[in-house]
Length: 216
Image 1: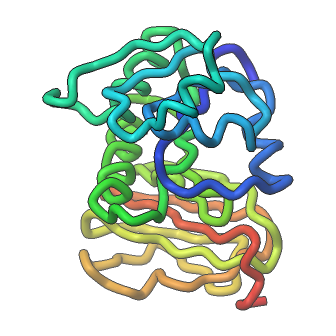
Image 2: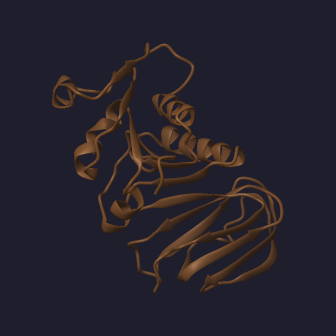
Image 3: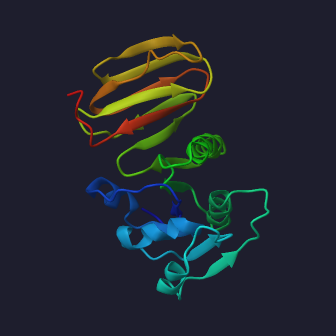
């Protein structure tokens, strides 16, 4: 990793795994409100802690007295996560790991993280969303190579109609396939190792379960 790789700690669940530890190694960290609770588990100290702190207990604040905090009012136009991402971009971020972005009690937040991740990828950033047990990678027109464990489950979810989608390195390969918007055709594939995806037009998200070998 380089000084331009940032981990953003968000409020969703986060399971620490060897794979996640490797992904986070060497990154700079910014915590968004209650996402700070993951800092101890990942073994990295954030350089900044932002948010309205409405989901941060006093005990958590007391546990990290030396981390710089930037408070925002609860009545604001952006989520705490978006504020944290903006802070990372101001510091020169070229890669973002949105940790704690998937799952949890708030489906609206998880879905917004997926949309935000796609938007960030469209601006040229390298983006990974993760809960430790699940990972999401934006897919835009062009070629995307993703290093997945052999036998793990993954799906491609289209946010548009997709054209010329090719999938190589998977049990169910595709070659220049058209996927209508809302189709389930690209759900529940199995990685045979690193997976290469080529997309002609459209936007999608690859969701993988790197610890789930039930399809192997």
